[in-house]
Image (cartoon, rainbow, N blue to C red):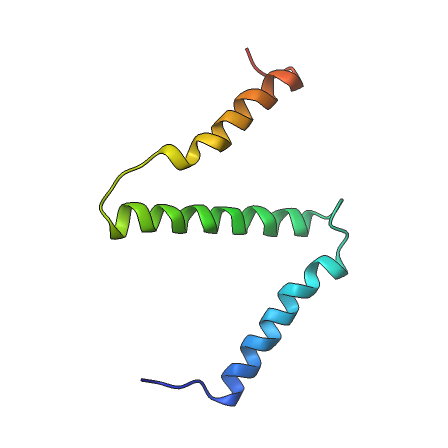
Length: 83
């Protein structure tokens, strides 16, 4: 097995520190960067859930998307954009 050297470990620590500092540098309430990163990591988590369910076990499940679709179905009519 390949072990991590000091340069590689330092790089990972610097990357982790940079990711942890994003909310401190940008305003979380009005920043597009924080919104974009939140949505990107949400989709990463969703894709990994799909990978585990469908890829490793061979099962197909569409139940994990239900909370998202329910929230969209309830929020659009309140905005005046639904039927």
